[in-house]
Image (cartoon, rainbow, N blue to C red; front, side, top):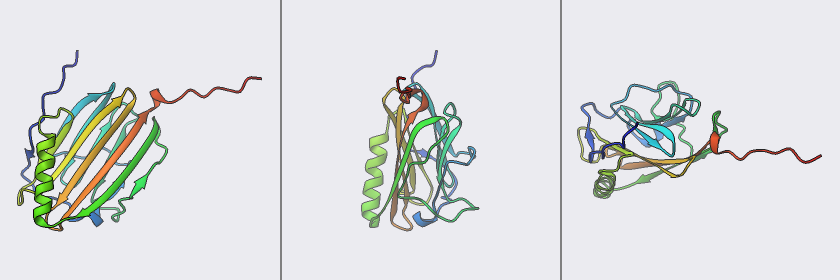
Length: 188
């Protein structure tokens, strides 16, 4: 029997510097295998296992049971930054997948205030993960996942780049294939 996950700490300190440098260098992919994580948290949401992963180059969300779906937002060595404002591709193993991203440009004080409020809000949430990188209190990558209904998942991520005064926010909503409507043939 699987027990409920323990509350997440405010922010897990990591000992390596950010690998990403600014929003325009980020790429989005559903084609990468899981990469080595600096911090990870696995949770069961709406009957689906979800692994939240902070990388040295941003984040991955892994859905092992959903045809091995892996969402990656990171600086990828073989891809130019191409973080889309929105994407809704057909994903094998899922009924639907929708991704959006925004980039906010903030002053140092605004960014620090937003990051502090974000980390405080996520503190203790069992399906959240925040990692604090050395060098600045605003150097944080955070993920928060939820299941509003069986077969439905969503997660949000935040990538703070204090050196550029940027906060990258993403939102993903999926519906698992098990929740997909059944197609019926017309009566003959």
